[in-house]
Image (cartoon, rainbow, N blue to C red; front, side):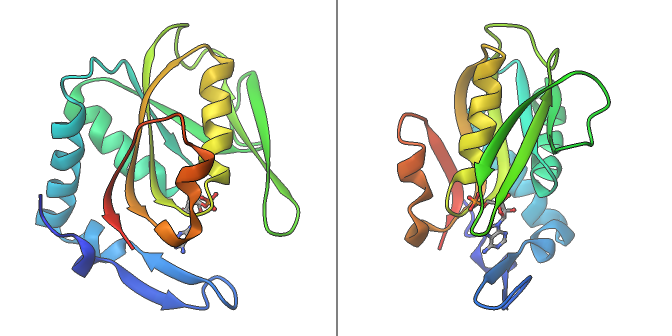
Length: 171
Ligand code: AMP
């Protein structure tokens, strides 16, 4: 598999002091790198009989929708509170200061569907843990979690110990 690290730009102190932000826009803007990243996900999951790919608001949408198109399956958005128009399930999770809420449409996929969750970055794992809760509220079978980047020092993987995690880049 291609080494994608050169397409990730470090931005210190964004969006606030002390955060080293992983900017994925150089990868998105490079047609070979973006296409190869989607193909790497496709190779990993094309034999898994996936029914739906769940993307997490907002950068997760980019990878989840491209991969859903590539695999010929449905795309399902998990969005921040107040954005989805129909009946939703909610999951609230802890941030460094305060909480945040993620939502999914109650009819996003049918019970027993084989679901893949896709996001750009795994940091502490809070966002993914809440997303898993939403998939499980709908009685989906979580096949795996596909990530562009895993920040291993933050040990987010420990929060998601029972699930199969596949990341293209580790920092
Ligand atoms: P967490 O819930 O801590 O795992 O944070 C994951 C979410 O926050 C992902 O959806 C990322 O988009 C974003 N995120 C967290 N840390 C970073 C970082 N250092 N660089 C870029 N995005 C980040």
